[in-house]
Length: 275
Length: 313
Image (spheres, each protein chain N blue to C red):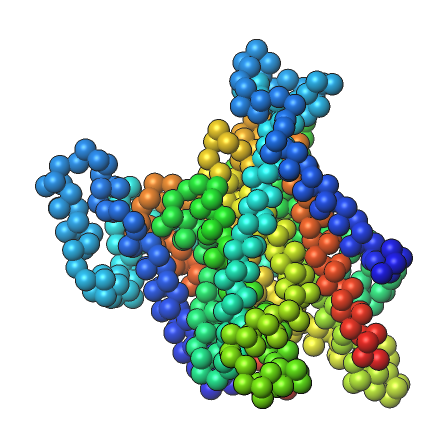
C-alpha cells in the first residue's frame, strides 16, 4: 500500500503510538535519574535543563517518574486488552459457531455483564483480587471482555455464512478446526481494530483506577498515580500535574486516532470492493 | 405501548437480579476469612466467631444471598462495618447528590451536543464542522481524572479563584452555593459525554440526510426548514437518545472518578471509600445501586425511544 493511501489520522495516531511504546520501553530500562530518589532540598523544583519537567514534593525527578510510569500504564492498556481478547475471542467463536440456544444463553449472560458499567465492574473484581498493578490489569481485562464477545460474535456469524466454511463442514471438519482454522484467520483485521481502540480505553481506565488508589501502589507510579500526586501538590506547584496530564492525554489521542482511523479506512475499502 | 413497557420492565428486573448475583458472588466469598480481614490477625477466636455469626458467614451461600436480596427489597441494605450505621441511612443523601450530578451532566451534554452535532452534519466539511470535530476529538481523549484537576488549577486557584475546588452544598440550603459547587464537576463530567454525543449525533444526522425519505421530501418541494425539523431531527433524536442511554454506563463510571477528584460526597466516592476499607456490605450496596441506576435508565430510554419512533414496533 502506498503511503498516500493511508489516512492522516492513522499516520498521526500510529506515530504517536510508536513513540509512546518506545518511550515506555526506554523507561523500563533507563531513566535519567532514579525515579524513587528522594531529595528534600529540591522539593517542587521548577523545570530546568537537568530536570525538564521539574521535581515533585519529595524532590524526585518528574521526567524519570513519567518514564518509569509509561511502562506501567502501557502494560495496563495492552495487557488488559490482550486478556479481554483472550477471553472474548474464544467465547465469541463458540457462540457464533454453535448458534441456537447455546448462543442465546451466552448472549444473555453477556448482556448482564454489559449492564454493569465497566469501571464499576472492574472495581467489584478488584475487591476480590486486592489492589495492585497486576490485579487492576486483570480486573480491567475481565470487565471489558463482554463487549468483545458481543462485537466479535456478530463478525463470526457473518463469516460462518461463507462458502469455505460450508465446504469445511461438508468435509466433516471438527468444530474446533472450523472455529480456529477457518473462521479465526479471516477475522483478524476487525479483531485488531477493536483491540487497538480498546487499548486507549484500558490505558485510561487503568490510570483512573490508580488515581483512585486501587491500581498501581506507591512508591511505584503509573500515570494515574502521578496525576493524583500532582493534584495534591497544586497549591505548591503545577508542574507535577502538568507533565503527566499532558503526556497521558497525548498518548490517548494517539491510540484513538490510530484505532478509529483504521476502522474508517477498512470500512471505506469495503465500500470500494462492493461497488 | 403498555405491553412494551411491561415486557421491558420484566427483562429489566431479571437483569437486575442477575447483576445482584454477580456483585454478591464476586464480593462475598473472598479468598481468606472475611472476619480475619476485618478484625486483623490478632483478634480473639471469640470475637471472630461472633463476627462470623453476625455476618452470617456460617450459613450456606444460597441462604446468604437470598437474605441479602430479601433485605434490599425491604429497603434494608445491612450495616456498614466501618461506619457502624445502617447503610440505608447513608445511601439516600449520597444517591441524591450523585443523581443531581448525573442529571445536570446529561442535560448540559444534550443541550450543547445536539445542536452542534446537527449544525456539523448540515455543514459537513465546513469550518464549523471541522472545528467541532477537532474539539470533540480532544474531548474524548482527555481522561476525566486529568481534566478535573486541570479545571481546578484554572478556575479554583489564584489568580482566578472563581469557584470552590471541592465539596457539596444541598440545593435547599443555599441555591447559589449549590450551583457554584456543581459547575466544575459537571463540566468535567460533561466534556467526554458531549464530545461523544456530538460525534454520534453528527453521524446519525448524516445518515438521515442521505436517506430516501429525506430526498423524497425535498423532491416534493417541502421547504428545507421543514425537511430538517420534521423529518431529520425526530429520527436523529431517537438515535441520540439510544447513544445517551448507553453512554450513561460510562458516566456512572466517570462519576466514581470525578467525585473523588472534587471530594464530592456522592455514591461514587462512598464506593471508593468502601473498597479502600474493605467494607463488604457497603461495597455491595453502592455498586448495586450504581448498576441498578444504569439498568433503570436504559429501560426508560428504550421506552422513550419507541415513543419517539413508533415505526420500530
